[in-house]
Length: 276
Ligand SMILES: NC(=O)c1ccc[n+]([C@@H]2O[C@H](COP(=O)([O-])OP(=O)(O)OC[C@H]3O[C@@H](n4cnc5c(N)ncnc54)[C@H](O)[C@@H]3O)[C@@H](O)[C@H]2O)c1
Image (cartoon, rainbow, N blue to C red; front, side, top):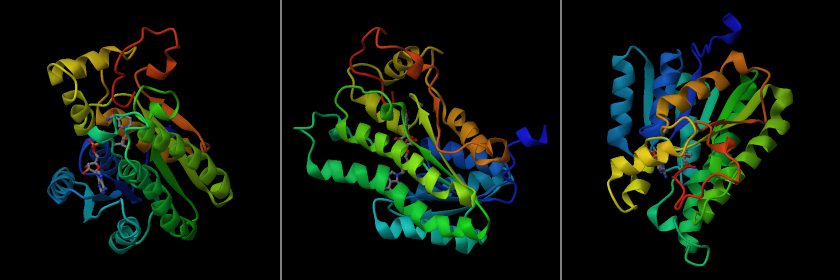
């Protein structure tokens, strides 16, 4: 049974975009599993509140304010974890954006919007891995868990930059996994369906009608009949980062209430739920 227990005790765990939403849930769950958690986020108020909440629950956490759209921000994320906890054992690349103006055709998508989405959703995953891997090697291994999306696997209308970014995350996950497997660095991805976060509610607010009703409607489109919560993703991330997943690498796990199991014959819905 011990093998199945997600034991992150004493592990140094970095979560990008860890102040709010899914990343906030991951920070809480990793700390509850015994990890020393570095929350990296551009939102200082929410980041500090997250760390205080973890400390109040008896966990260990630190916060770094950084813009993960920048090279310096990504490098600092790893440097701060090493400074605070002496290592990086687990890197959870969670940060991601889907701004309102990116719900558009390719013709309507500006180059600036494309570049920003790629910088945050893909390039930060590459840069943080690039800087974290030498520290994992020094410790004899580690785990990188990338948050992708079911939109990296199947398509929905009018999200070209976001969908391309999530496909790239899945490809990068496979590539890092095979390149570093012999060094005991496992690399995995999680593909969430619609999860109730600020990102999802921003998308819901763009629809006609009541936000709560839209979130409920999107939840009903998932076979399990509800939107997910950050904790639904966080518990899987903790499992993947721990010893129970020691023979897993180069793989993705859908945590989507069954959404990705729906076939093309499923009733067409317009627009598709955010994240799904
Ligand atoms: N919510 C969903 O339905 C859903 C579905 C599939 C995939 N995802 C993915 O899950 C991840 C988390 O999504 P979420 O819904 O929790 O998002 P969110 O917008 O609710 O939270 C994102 C967090 O990242 C931070 N952040 C954004 N840009 C940043 C930057 N440049 N530098 C530093 N921090 C930054 C924000 O301050 C916030 O704390 C993303 O990769 C997203 O694409 C979400």
